[in-house]
Image: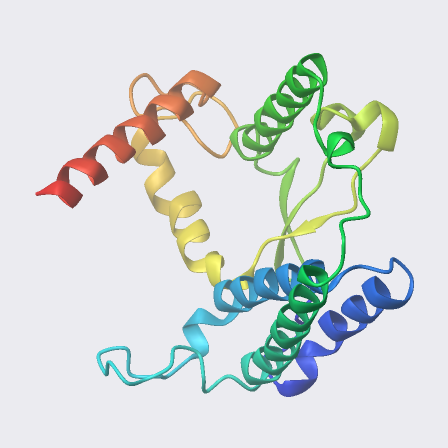
Length: 223
């Protein structure tokens, strides 16, 4: 989506918004929400390249990244369009049937079950990574390769295209693989292992790990 930190890196986002406008007839609010999400993506991808002094209260974070400056221009234009549309909508009668926007209770429960299943599949993607099989290094890049059996909807979509791991994670990933993982005495070839016993990381162990970290963060946050 954002192949570079230069101004041209915003091209795909611009083209996508144009697709939303011309093909999908998306309203200004949808366009704004998409671009706002893109801002977070750029922050995530290029946070290490911004040299703005964050200790300076007047400094605007990421303002020195050309791609962010270009993206912020698109966000500003979309925000103006939202305000204009809001004013026009306030002066016009409602044409949509509000009743059609509500789900029946059984539909809502079905949606929750589907989302729960998708979340379980996402954690499985990381928890079941296997060195040399689903987690491989090719041509200097770390990739995740999944066959149809490695993810929930594999029967429908078949083998996944390779997922490229962001290069800024390589130092920590390789340090863990080459040094720290052995300290846990793993009895398997999965990337992650349990702290006690050296067994594979289970879904419950992963849940407990996040629960513990969240509890400590709340304690220290309050203190």
